[in-house]
Amino acid sequence: MGYTASGWLETTMMKTTGEVMRVIRSGFVVSISNGQWQVTAQYDKPGHFTICGYDGTNTYGYLRDDPSLERIRKQYPKSDTAPAIVSRSDFPAQGAPYTFIPWLACASGPFFDKHGTNYLPSFWNGTPETCQISHAFGCQFKRGKLSGGIPDSLDWVVSGTNLEKLRKGWIPDCMLVYRLGTEEFLQTYRRYVPGRLDAHFNVLSVTNWNSLVLPSEFEFKRYFPVPIGASTKPLRELIRGMVTNLAPCSLSNPRPEIPPDLALSLMDLRYRKLDRGVAYIDYRHEAKVWPSENDPRLLMLLRNTKTNMYQPISRARRIMMVLAIFVLPLIPVGILWAKREKKQTKTNQTVQ
Image (tube, rainbow, N blue to C red):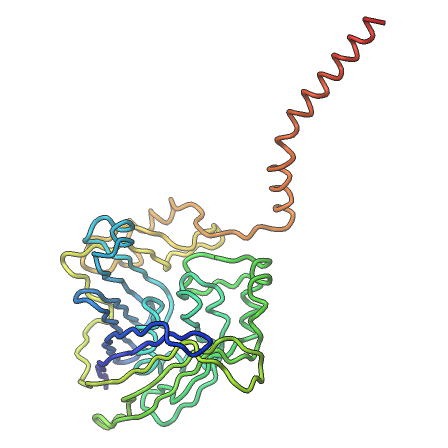
């Protein structure tokens, strides 16, 4: 039996001193039935939200942003266009933490049935679509108190296995592009120590609803990095959530409905051809039904898409680039100098 949970989140960002930097309030609606789910994060203004849904194969989502924001006007001049994504991921990659934490509290059971403790992306390093290091985590969780396999508590722990996979070029299904190469990864993320606890999720209280035991209050804590075994872990972010209403799930299709006045600027990760360097295809989608994977127009677009995946630069290539920048411009100078010396030599010989 499915259900719909709605409520609110309060997100508090802190300094290392414990001083509060910012508090953000948002709402959420989570629906789940037969392993399929949909999550909506409702922001500060009406009509400003992120919505994403998982149909058992792909995750579909878009951001309906506040059109008064200057960055939105610049990036999407047409007010009827929203950024959107389709990927193979089975968690809400968009809108984190405002979609991720409600999903974790209310609809994540099927994810852990599939992945166990091997993998749980973070959302605080950057969105999982664009940040490679967000996939460096495994998890340690306890289950049993709540219905549907939802974790009672959970720790994000840096995974040595996942770090090594990333170092060797692993590209998770939900990533738009390969952001970092092997050398960059080693240089930038040496501070990620396998086994270190970076964040914790915990259900604080539960409620009984139609013979189900479901969360009524929960929290997420993220810490500043400290050495393993440190006696204290300064709090960096605190998210408290509360479910204020539960109802039977009336969701007929987990894919988000596309409003009549909206077109999607869509990045589609179902069409990955990594051997060709193609991480996704992007296009404007104006139909009100999400495109089929066998859509002839999209298959043609895939055939015509050139490399859009960042390629890591090898050490040898870097040396060649430095030589090209600093040495090649000197070659004409050297040629002119050699010609002048030759001419001067002939002149001296004539005079003698």
